[in-house]
Image 1: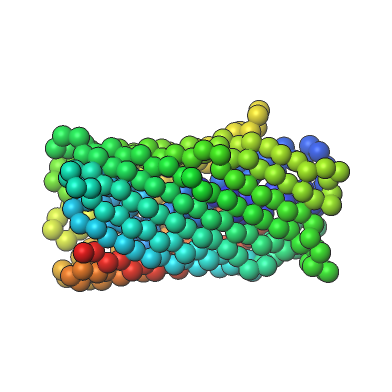
Image 2 (image 1 turned 180 degrees about the horizontal axis):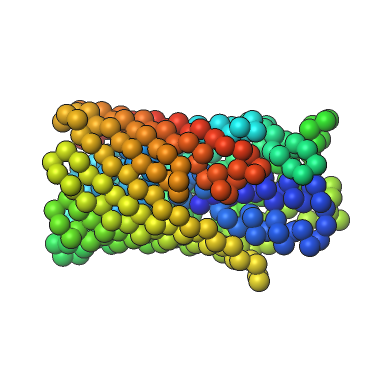
Length: 333
């Protein structure tokens, strides 16, 4: 989901127009949440295939149901950089560890993510302002196999905290501070193996967020509550020994009082294993092209992915186009 960039949009609207009715518009924009941090994150391998979340089996995983298919412990580190044309730069570091449980057919995963930005410009109707963004997330996933073909999973997010500051570009003075914490966050996942190596998957997220804002433009702090959710439905298929493909539909929704917002799109990709060690990938994420490269060896693997203009439909007017590079290293034992 996409809180940190969307928060910038809210701040821009408030700071440039500073009118009560405008907050409603800004709140709707803010509610298009979690685009660049943990809730919508996937592995670098799957990012190179367009960002598949729900239905592709990988050493790391975003669908908690895959924890039920673990047969050995694994851990990974992921680093991502998104450079926007306007000048804002987001960096994200994520780490995870996953392990099967002793009973078999079930497992757990712990995931942490930190996102931050430079003090970068954001475009507004009256000119450029400057903003800084940070986010910290922690999630725990549990998955279990039920029968030969079904897996189910549950994820909880005890920590999800975002802060955003908006500054006057002339003197660097603070215009606005926005702080968001998740009161409750959970993720449900399901998988069905309809053929060997081919899966249908579902991921559903739901978050309740408290947003507190202070500003020189407001007579008193403002507090709001948002309910945000996302749904991913996807299908993967092992086309032959060397080629696997996947297609997925996703929708993000948020609500605060009578204000509602939603966005949806398709992602799809193909991976070709040129050798037992080397694989290439290509994909599309809501119209944006993705490329990837991966190397597998005994006990470890490394992946690289690139995505052009990620989420441009949501943030392009404020931040312009973008280039995202992502790398990940994984070990198993």
